[in-house]
Image 1: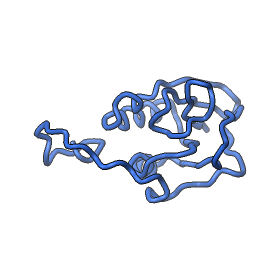
Image 2: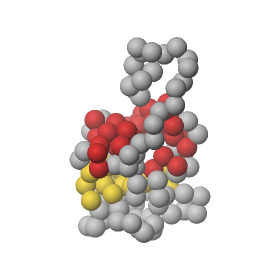
Image 3: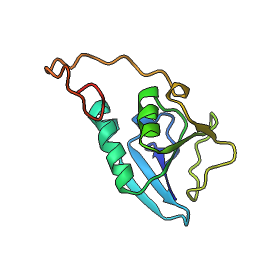
Length: 134
């Protein structure tokens, strides 16, 4: 199995999934692959891009400290297992195993409330894509 972990610029587990510049993908054997986080630059379509990249990398689990409700819901609907680390946990694990103290998240409501969406003003009303609103 492969696990994705959001990583900050100091090489630690990021405090918030969407703001992490990188995702570290770990295998059970400890192999590492780095993925740039497209959500860091483009929150809306970045969610779709990141989900596609994680699926392409074979990721089945995501380990986070904080994650927004919309992103959590999207990942759960895509079949990813999402786990939350306890507050203050910043050390990167050596392999893809989920730490015993991690909490399994099974509902979008377990994420942080997402910020209200800004109006895109691009005439996309009625169109639905990966993000559900354009």
